[in-house]
Length: 392
Image 1 (cartoon, helix red, strand yellow):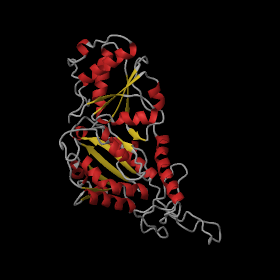
Image 2 (cartoon, one colour; image 1 turned 180 degrees about the vertical axis):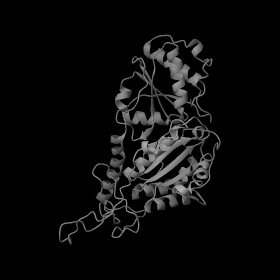
Image 3 (cartoon, rainbow, N blue to C red; image 1 turned 135 degrees about the horizontal axis):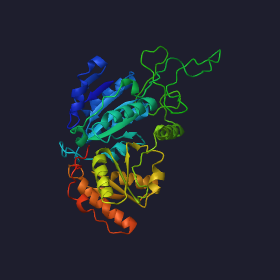
Image 4 (cartoon, rainbow, N blue to C red; image 1 turned 90 degrees about the vertical axis):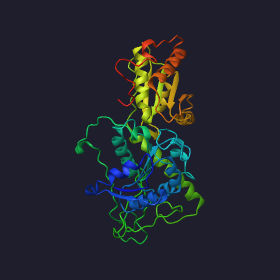
């Protein structure tokens, strides 16, 4: 793994930590700016390493053209965005979830990027492994959306056994893969860098220096298969659609969503992503302790969405979407599933409060079931088990 990074709050600790692990083959470079950092990571990916770059929202803005280059050249690149309050320099030491639409669309042209979001400090490891799996398997840059709350938080975490981790096979190209007209025996005698795996649509990953597998990358559109520069309109349309189809194909490898609906009678679903997992879970448990029904589902994969998400949303009469932004996931859900999600939005530079969220959930449950909801001692007053700690 090779990290190219420029120091920025609150992502700099990743550079500090990884610089300690040279013995595990980790290479780190503190670049002169954000653009140089991602450029170095892309170069490392071309050279056969998992390229990684770490930053916050302002750095993502600077890296956007280079991320588009990684989309076009279809190289495995992990982009870690530890979100902070914005816009611009904003609130460097405060938390926010307002980079989701930037992660989805913040590049010129059609440049789709998978998005993975951890839900707690301990989950950051598993989310990073999942992001690496997608990047390497599908030959694509992947956005890992953390935030300042997770970066500065902590929780007990069981160190995994290496044998239990998923096997991620880079499947480097080792020889020719295309039969030219000059082939006398019908066997492959040329290397085409944009021939694809039928299942994943991933292109071959050839380590420079492998005899016979030379090819070039750059910021101009590639021809299907052979990978030479192409200005053909039909080829550009085909490559754009193929890159989008590759990202959508990732959904086939995702596990079914886990819906927390203990009674099975809930008419209200609360859906979230990222570090809102703790406050949402605590708020839902308060509502249930007061005798009411509510379901919860939390998204790790934001692009593409899991295949069963639409069916899950359709089960419930009302959908609440708590976010530390002005409704970015709500917009995506409306666009994809025509679901009129109800936003619960605070942009204070602070995590959501479980007690306040519980009151909002209770009001929505009352509307859905046509009843008066009174959370009583389970509402704004913290319960005896101190469940206000949202990351437990």
